[in-house]
Length: 510
Image (cartoon, rainbow, N blue to C red; front, side, top):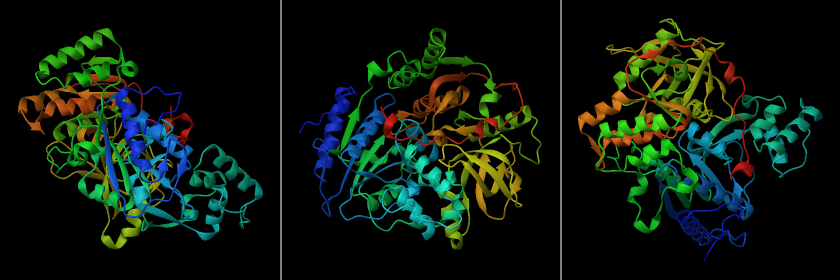
């Protein structure tokens, strides 16, 4: 069965073949994209497919196109903010990513993605406000709610017509999440179709969790990235049979004249040595302003786009240099300093609070900007980068590591809560799934990895590190060659964070 994509798109041969293969799989599950028809899902039928390809191969374009086709066929997109009444005949799709930042990259391309955690755990709404959610989603009559005026409900309705977000609409009516979300529960009933982006970051346990929920899974991933720790260089999709793995190659007509992608794909040359690669970076920098050979790390850029390094020791030294350049005191954080969530430090009996913090975006690896102290001791006001509702106040344990000191300095600490490390420099492993307009790669660390002679799944480690690092850059790559820091142009600020990222709909998915 040949399935034609949307006429405004021109697929490569690889993409067209993968589209048809996924469409055929969905047809076998009762979702006919060619005819736009749905039938109930057959119980007991399950499948996992993987669509893999390096940067520039069109994975995101394919994911967006499939999403549009599923929505056009009548499949309901399930997000992490609200789920309406279950209907026996409904078919559903969830588009997921392992981190907030990875999900936000998709949302900025018009794909309504959320995090895996927000699907594993669903919000429990106050019954009164659930009536508003049902009305907004077309499943109930306009409610009368004590304390909410008709004008407030009109604002909520107008917002939802523009952006299909129930929490956003309730916020437009003047409510906070704590007003209408009373808790979180682990999803008990399965969903239907799951598209998982950045699946190279998944470990076996996460895949099993997803398989329990989604009878039909399509994994989208990059086989050249770094595998999760503990998988010995193997991705979860590497274990699928050959017929279950669809490989995309680079689309030259869409990525032509892109020096960053040229460098990324050059790393596939088995004979390439580090010194040769660095000469290629120099040549690219002479020809194109999107590649920069830098002798110093840019301190201003570190505040929003971390320097990417291999070694922890390098990370800690660069963080100390950053804090010193901005005049940060040893015993406190300045508003505007970047942080990375290192997990939630709560005992099992506080499972509900853990779920609440994670649902608000504070999952391990989340990028956060410090806004200032909270209203309670040990609390901090934070901006969670990439979260749909980024402003958070949370019990925080903030750790500042120092060179050659075993114990970190802790300028702010609650007894329990979300733990953070400084985020001005980040290891390349932790940067996976994220992208920034401009990225600084600390080349001396890549060289050190080359000198170490280590390999991962038969590929020299330095090549994997270099590939992941440079493909984090969307617009400009800075290849930093010296251990020096340029002085900042001004003080740290949080003015750029006053407005959270706008949620987007499928209209921009092309």
